[in-house]
Image (cartoon, chains in turn orange, blue):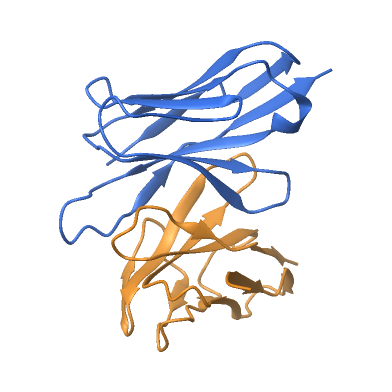
Length: 112
Length: 115
């Protein structure tokens, strides 16, 4: 089945720890995106990447880092510098030349 | 900075009734997207509107785009319980060659359809 997978579905982190959220897609999409969603809020863009080995900051990149070593993978690291990391994190991807971003199932991160 | 405002943020309606959700945005854009989100789930793409005057319909939902007014509407006809969800509009900041297709989302409209 083609699609976007995110893991884990739920993640608990102690303050001061870095954690990495996985996003993989087998749709052969070129662009990949990370969004954060807080309760009752819309999505806010953290980072995005249009090609391998290249990525750009979104609106709320502070405290996060990404890599894009493979076309199908775009992991997000939430560092200890992120002051309020508890949120729902959504990964999306898009085939360049088309208009729609498709979203993965999300990872719910809770900081204890 | 692009701002996207949806209203209402909460909408409770009876089955069989009609209603409209509004999405206003602050800068020029010809590309607007509507998504649906069920509780605890991911986003599902509903409509992609790519030009002024674009209208798309799927079942009981119809979306339109007026780029001059910087306004999109999502009209619900004869609502049914299965339409209960949160609906988001998102605006593309740029679409010309080399665009990053960055989306700015509204806060969402929580729709509850009551029997």
